[in-house]
Length: 401
Image 1: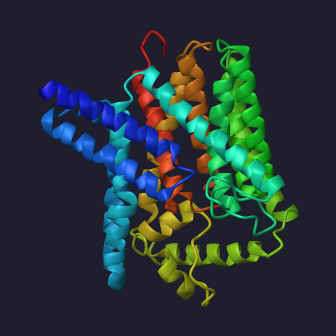
Image 2 (image 1 turned 180 degrees about the vertical axis):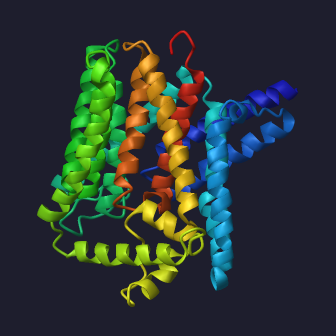
């Protein structure tokens, strides 16, 4: 009887995760419902049959994540009258994601299930591409019913930057998956057509940060896939590619100006963020309090997000919190790149891991320009892709790696 219950819970968790992944660009409420079902079912399963192998096999990863949360918790000492808001941000906005990461790593224990999750993600992304197309040329968006209210295409997201953040993550995944040579030609053509449609969607979104994030992800795919050809000079090219990417930021800001003058707005807010960091460099102003303190540090300019995840993270919870997060993300990239370079270059795992890692790269680079981690949908997207990345590294056989 117990085994039947455990098997049932396994199925519930797995398909709840598929539902959550599918609805990331479509419905915030559906994301919450499916995530809740997956987490609750997983916890019941853990009570019936405790299994901490996923954490034990990723001790360093979860250690960095623990340090990140410890420093965020310490920032509560500087929250002052905003303590209740900081507590809510710590436990509700951030607290669910380590648990979700554990659920994903524990659930997707083999390539077959990871491929299913990637297919769900790609099908959902294809719908986003089609709805952007209809919004661009027919004036309606069929997933959320968003009209064309501005000069920019938004797809099912609230604004163009939300669409760009999503695309900078999913496009490299689809492209890398499409490069796997063992699929049927018709399937590969479909993947490349969807990739092309999504790249056009990114162009129509007209988000400079989104373009730079997408370029970063595509560079990652190009370099890893061609590793065997440039093996001797891989690391110099890899490092120089991303160093050369940074001037694009200045070029974009200089030559592509928004019509509403948002560049000046961003500069004012960024300066305010640096002032917050200068006043409280170690513990920050308190997690979740950036908008409340924004006006004070920008001469009453208003209450805004920082337009930069890392600046906001540092301003809210201090430099040690930011360093812990960067170590956490950096460790995932270290393991993923190391695993990719040891895999057979024609294996399915190689292309999926390359795509997932490239998607993370695109997302993290775009986060220099937006607060993606503070968006419900995009935060879930990041932790899902990261969880699948870690799960695939974990499940890769030694002989393949």
